[in-house]
Amino acid sequence: MEQKACIASLSRDEAQSWRKHKKRLIKRVKQPLETPSALNECWSMDFMSDALTDGRKLRVFNVIDDCNREALAIDAGLSYPARAVVETLNNLKEELGAPKYIRCDNGPEFLSKTFTKWCMTNCIEIKYTQPGKPMQNGYIERFNRFFREDILDAYYFNDIHQLQKISDNWKEDL
Image (cartoon, rainbow, N blue to C red):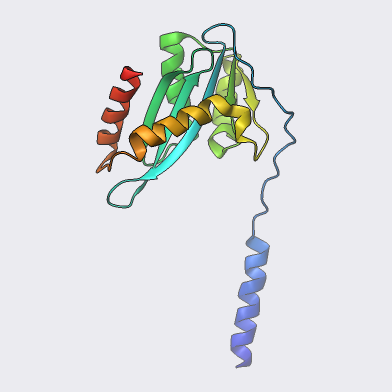
């Protein structure tokens, strides 16, 4: 019996030594939500989550232009790491040019070195929202609501390609 208690306490001690501490976010200054006066001045980005019919989780990456609220990108994937975010933004930059700044939340993809380095290289300012204040990125939140109502809640998806095709058609109809 003593042996079990010793093993339990060792594993508990080991667990405490391996426990990672949550990374603290730096304080974010409140950024007013302003309507840009020109196209390509500010892009807003956010992720949405849903599930396929087989239960696998999926993520949808949305990018809009804040000036006219046009959907620039709607990309779906089973996972969407920072590398994929940068790839999507590179494609948009080649097609439309780079924005002056990007508005996004404090998600891990947007805090990553890959994303921040890409923004720095392309002279794009990142305007992070304060944690727990999604309305500081209200344009993309409104877009997400319409996308959820019109696409994610209206259909069942068997695979990513089906979702991407319906999303592309919806984007063209806007």
